[in-house]
Image (cartoon, rainbow, N blue to C red; front, side, top):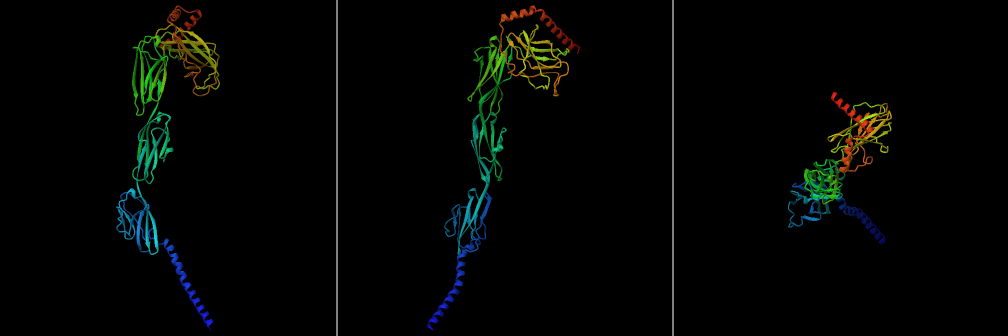
Length: 508
């Protein structure tokens, strides 16, 4: 009996323990899982990022499902307010509400940051995070600022430090044709200064949708080696006359100009006068005209001059020639009919000294596939020396008939004139076709046309070959005394041709 009773008690105890387990186990599980269950359900408010502007009022909520014992707020890990310590005064413009929310009055840029609400309830600690983003217009700090001076070839680094909320978008604008789009939204650019045209304002603009866009401008001044140019060279003159040599100098900074003659500095002479005058003065460089005037020109004054400009960057010069040689001759229309094997030529040249002779150069060119711009640099020239007639004044005219030409062909001619100071530069090429059919492309090509070349490689420049006064006087006297019979016939033919031209213009 005893053993059975004991067993029964044990069995009863076991049954009781088993029933307790069924009751206690769920309670333990519920107790353990309760904080986890509250994690997702404990706040009625949700995490919020408030985007606002200065001087606005912001309310950061911290609503909990359960009553809280205390609440405290911090910004970026800095304690702002704690309900457990009433003596702890919150910062100005901050106020803790009874429901646990935090009010920020008249927000400023410094109020931007991450805010954390921390509460203690019966269930334990709960945390909710918020953020305030105070938006404000962009501002720019540019370096270098206002003005910068650089040399050609240098790399200019420009920094445009743009701040604002949201982050500003940066654009660049240049005075010249540089591709500013490649620099867009870059806070720093490296600009290679290739030439003087890079001078001018460089503008950085920042915008972020808050307020108006803001811009800053940097004035870039480019220093460069002077650029020297001449308007006319050679300058033709006559002994005893006055002459002027002129050069144009563009520079930054302003250049000093010195004149040289035949490689040497210009000697001190009262006949030389220098004049400097400004042509234009743009904001970023200067353009000056420099004139050297020579009174009562002498033989010794002829030759090559150099206008040399110098500034702190470097030296550059340009050459001019003062000469008594004839000017470049030009062909004139002939009124006489040409035959299939001849062509009449008339030209005109200006020379302050009497012309001694002419050099007529001609050649036949391939007639197929001719265009006005086609060149024949390798074809040889035939040359004729034609004595000049005796004419007064500076303007000299002459005519000549080329004979023995091949029909249905295309020819080119140039003319040069010589006086006591040497040969003139070659004229522009005259291209003409003899009688008959010539295969020419339909490109506006005329039977006779003047082509404005040659190049220097085909017609090298001719240096002065000054004839002494004794030689010149003897030669001029010989020309006046007469020429041989063969030349007389040719001379009379030319005079007859000129007479016909004169009558033609009178009649018409």
